[in-house]
Length: 498
Image: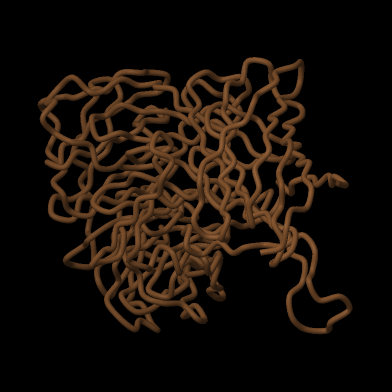
């Protein structure tokens, strides 16, 4: 019987985020020249974890520990990490624990510092504004602090003549340190960021925020000024350059209410924010909000959590009574990372803005951030994960890298709806010699219930060949382990009709 060759498409932009959403694709339409009805459609990735897209295909990833767990107050659990700049202008990572204590990871250091004399930051909202190379850390119930690099301590900062009461946070933009409460903002002198005495000479002032549809929850900068997130909408404060009226306020079109500071990726100096709001995942700028990646929103707003056990080769599904935990970050101005999980973050969806493709990671963590270490240039391996014990792990997908444990499932492959496909061979080309991975054919006689079929592996320089003879209505290709896949082809023949 004639054999057919088919090259697998490894460049599609999306994949179903639940296995129940994957369809049975067909390579050939059953209805020739029909304007409607079944059409040929390309099979795609149906599941992955610890896999990232690259231009030519997919690569499995691992994690390298670059900072060990904290040794002081080991009973405390880390919950968050922020990038700040100390009094000497150096980059410092602020680690926050569930008990509200602050640790510091100074520039080029790989061990967390804890100073018993540092004030407990509490578990209130903690916001950061950086002016003239120094960060000001505002804790809602305690006030403003700065980081003293020489003694590794957070020291109080006195703010002069603050004209608004009940301040809940700070932010910085256009050379101003800005304080805010639930209805007002106050901006500092452009000469001294701690001086809030209203003056037409220094530029300090304050005012209520127009167009509010709810209380201010937090304020974060963008490249045009500020975005003020409230419980019901977003208000843009666009920098004018006018000392008397430095910010022009206007409601952002189509904006929805904020869910929390952790739901906004604001770290990059860009006009757009990626934010998960009450309207779902959106891009938010000073003019309007636009819905983004609706299948992400549908999955993250849903109440079904799914995982795959590569040892048992089976999916597990947990039906939830509430939606999943979420946290949004933008890394290296390229990777939109959405951490999610049931009671803690166990997975992360990664959208590569440049390639417009999706990866998925499986690692238990409390925060994702841009880890630079001693790097001069930001690399694709700057995606860092903070673990609850304080250790930091960075994503590693340079090939070869030992310890990668990726899972990639492709399918479902059918020739037509009514005819079996007999799979003879799967060839993975351009494979690194040190990569170790397994291939399994998940074959379904009825197109639904899959059975794992192993294959005979042939290893040669630059490729792997898997020989088998399995017949079924549909086939899914499962790769597990350390791989860098950019060319996969199938050899099959046609079986009987069902």
